[in-house]
Image 1 (cartoon, rainbow, N blue to C red):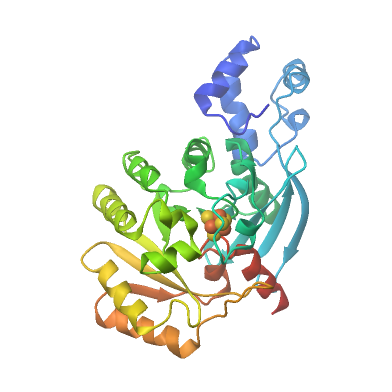
Image 2 (image 1 turned 120 degrees about the horizontal axis):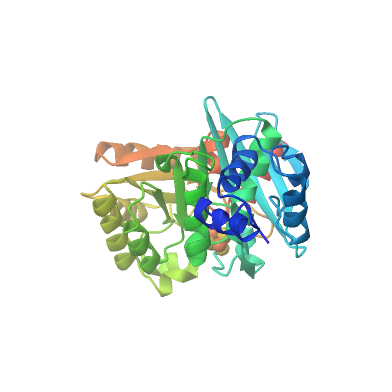
Length: 344
Ligand code: SF4
């Protein structure tokens, strides 16, 4: 059982169930989140008998094993985590000056089957629990001996297809008794689960929303992101605009640029149309090739042309080429980007 995937109130219920006073829950939270201690027997202000009770009942502050890690020369570090049922997931640490970001997974595998994504090609295993999501951030922060300032749900999986566990994890990352990451520094990236976008807008959080757009017409987007057949562009953009309006938060539109696929004149015109008149930001991402993929990255001059044209039309836009930003740019590109980084 998890004690890192629960709220303070839930933990209070657990500890009082063992006949302990409520404040034990706060003590446990401090050990886990503030001191980075994942070993119950090292929590010196907890009675030894209580530590044993928790252990014997199977409550653990740690639900992931770090199976491996690989660090790029610029400090980016990719972690391979082993879940208790033997499945693997990935998380990534991205240091950028004062910003320390963790990109975390929300599912083991993914059912969305996006054409450009290595994870999507391998299918879906299961949703992660809240504790498995939070523990990625904890383990990485503890390993790096640093305070994590930003966290993004852009690793393996579609976060909004695991809505409850993801949202609860984000609340724990944000909580005073948790990791105290500002809500404005938390981001959910989705391939476009429209009902969940409306639901998220009503949560009254300041969480950022990023949409994996990647195409400006339904035919191409359905080829790249099969979910588009269920929630086509018109309804996705309507939901995104609604999110921006309701939350007053700028929505990021991720656009992986693939040569000859989505980087032509019509695509640029489509981007201008889809972004007109609302609070959004376009993030142009160079595609990172994966083996056996027919796709290639757009030419740098094409990316620059997209950038300039969007800027000229007063659309907020950036090209994410720096290593860290690339990693956090969009789910499904994570593994490949890191491999690329490691080679550089
Ligand atoms: S890109 Fe994201 S949503 Fe699409 S298959 Fe990959 S992990 Fe899933």
